[in-house]
Image 1 (tube, rainbow, N blue to C red):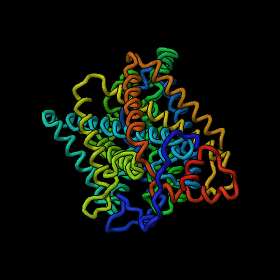
Image 2 (cartoon, helix red, strand yellow):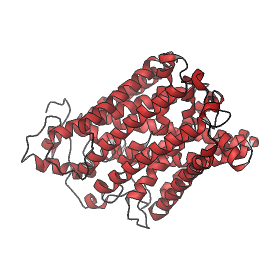
Image 3 (tube, helix red, strand yellow):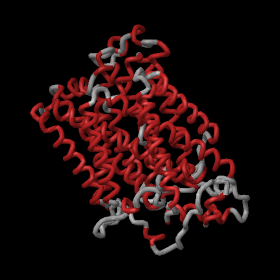
Image 4 (tube, rainbow, N blue to C red):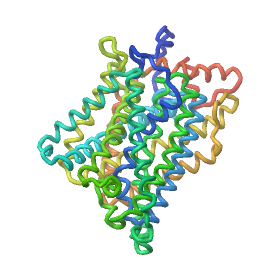
Length: 494
């Protein structure tokens, strides 16, 4: 083939083809529904609407609002595009599977690893944030900060290892609790919103001009980042071609409504601008007004959503690591379950150990939060761009394949979304005033991954059973359609 790599090994199909061990299927088998996917999307994303997004207000309310609208529409177009692809070919590992199929083996490996690292770093940031919340309420926990992190990881991983019906009910409880608190916040305080008095007026519409807008633009992603992780569930749930698109689209629409509501209500309450832009917990002032509690007690209302985000991202990176390991791009042991348990214990624990270690670095190194977020968003933007390219490629080359859902925006929506992610990358690389540390860290990670791929993974990679199951229709389709060049390695190998 045109790929300079050894022939990819393909084992014969076995009974495991139909079994699909899953970390969410335990003794208590659960029939997954679109509601489960909606709830999982909420738990992954919703924590970002409770904190951190408000730092974007340093550029002004209008600038921050514009960033939120642009980013929200980009995520909507991305979600619709990915939902269409999932209804056609539900790739295991999300962006990894799609990129490996459409952009090549090396790019697919990079996309999978970068997305997994992105989620690992998000978990680190969220765990450290959760520790700050708890120490705000109980200052005596400061000396036990590391213990708080450890317990958080144990509880989050434990819920995933239990799996089955228990996990999904727990996840639904977290989702309904987290979004319920936001609804109470927005509806209960709607009558007290006074934008004229609290939003800062014309003086705070735009602060710092275009430079500050570019610098703060990536922060608007906190409202939506993680919605794409639902595509990593394709080999975990029943009937992913139907279940995931329905749940993901409704979840995205829900997040658009909650994001707009939280933004307007928060800037319309005292203390308003500019104080709210520097608050650790921007919703606390509203909770204090609504429930007549202290600010420290109000912080507790943000804990369910923060924990939900942690557990959701752990699940996401565990699924990606498992997909990579099942293709032997990472050590195959990371794919295995433990003592008959259906959960990929080694993927969950391995990623969590790395994330836990990063908590110490984040805690002791000043301003590392910002650098980690920039690296996360740089990797995320690259992965999103790759997914848009993959969508455009499959949309144009495989027009005859059945799709249970079609994006109303089609290729134009994918292109528009891709332009926003390129814009985000430019804002991170050129406007963060971090002496290009974020770019250096991201580049260093990519270099290490590239060396590992070309020295190790390239010579032992194979196709997992999930990949062969998904690509079987593509193989059959070649009897009707010419094989596109980027898919030919799969067809030849199969």
